[in-house]
Length: 471
Image (cartoon, rainbow, N blue to C red):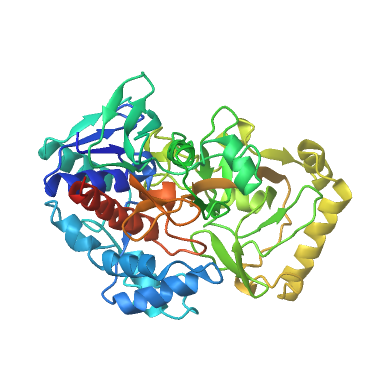
């Protein structure tokens, strides 16, 4: 083969299509079976960031990076490449259109320079989720006759002993596949590997919103041949509820009632629960920080319990593994999940403390102080908006532990503007490329649709560059 692509999410599919269209013979190795292939792309919203101004987009990306600056050639490749994504997806033979909510909501960080570039979220036919984007990509591979091998995880890269350049891969079954021109790693992040999550994010026993097949395979393979790493402490996490029998979690949206607080293991409230935030970060005390970034107990009362489902089903938000792949529909009154033990219950705050292991006095004080803030209409301690201040008054009381829930990680092998993987001294590892969340562009904050756009941009760059690589 000329090009071997490892993984078939947005980045892997884009790389394979670009390499094929550049004249290369391509094979795609997918870890999962056909029914679960596609990683997070399959269960994502399937929308990408759209804009018409690369110069302003570059300004916005630099601002989002803060003091974690990216190399300027990477910024330029991203800002110009993301402008072309909608046209490229359209070229696959589907209609592309704006998603109404994201096109009217504007940028998630409107206070940052360059945010005026944000042109909304574009999707296949303007419809979010339901696996529609992955279906388009899978069909495009099939229509081109590209060789896709499901249930074929790659475990190791092969290299030329004289030059150190990457020459192919070894599969879990022991097979060797030669890549004359290059290997593209598009294996997703490491959110599905508890050890890597513990080491790089400092989190223990956290649920995953998307595919648990994202276990850092590409990261490890790249490290073994000398790759440097970047962005390893960056992630997107959300408030999520775990089914103890599964590693997958449910996004807790609380759209029907805001009578809810977060407390830590000491029973103390520690943050504005509804601070405006982007895809992973929020502006708190003058700094853009991960939000949420730590384990917490989410506490609410009977009024919130009875107001409506705290996690949306596919008709509300068609995103996430449990919703799309397992077909789970959250109960309208939350009772099925309470009865299943996913959410703890207490007729009093003291009983709830006993059920959760939280200190009773501290929990009671946190609720009392919060209720006083609601009565005053001012949250002096954390600055929560008065519009979201709803007291916890009506027993029974409820709580669940959020890990928090990982949507995806951002760190992996460092790469350049051509998606080539680099060593610590900046040397190119010839024949090795990375794209997608195995090696996200985003060093810190990111907006809606950024990850799919990034995967397409650097997937296409990787595939084309590998196909044309001089050997």
